[in-house]
Length: 148
Image 1 (cartoon, one colour):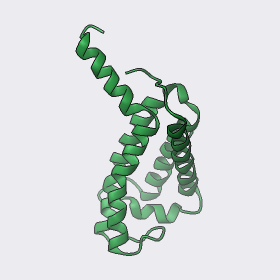
Image 2 (cartoon, helix red, strand yellow; image 1 turned 60 degrees about the horizontal axis):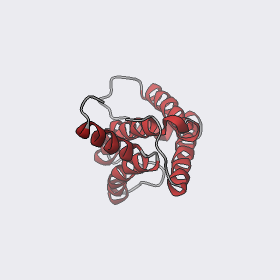
Image 3 (cartoon, one colour; image 1 turned 45 degrees about the horizontal axis):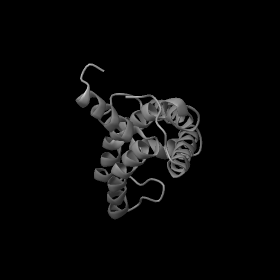
Image 4 (cartoon, one colour; image 1 turned 45 degrees about the vertical axis):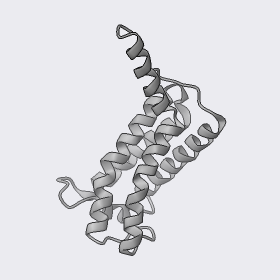
């Protein structure tokens, strides 16, 4: 897979929006939402919940800034962000199962709807960075020339 692929102006705008959202969320991890973010950490995680919130904030800040500034490697960043969204999904499920309120998600319906948006975030990360297109192109090249 090539580290960078040409993306449209629309994709770039959506990449910047998602990167900015990630930076904002990271700031929340370190400041005004730290206590609330702990409700996202499942009880079965063998680490202190506050530590998990700080560490995930660091990851979110890194991914957000990478979405904004590492444009040469945006397809790799897109895959990394999609993987991150996949890895935090159990926290969202735990929030739903344990009926934990967070940021306006104070009903089972609201928490359930949030679960449905996780695939949207994954697709957004892959589409806006051209990651999915780059992967498909690399597979096509290998199919036609397996030694490349």
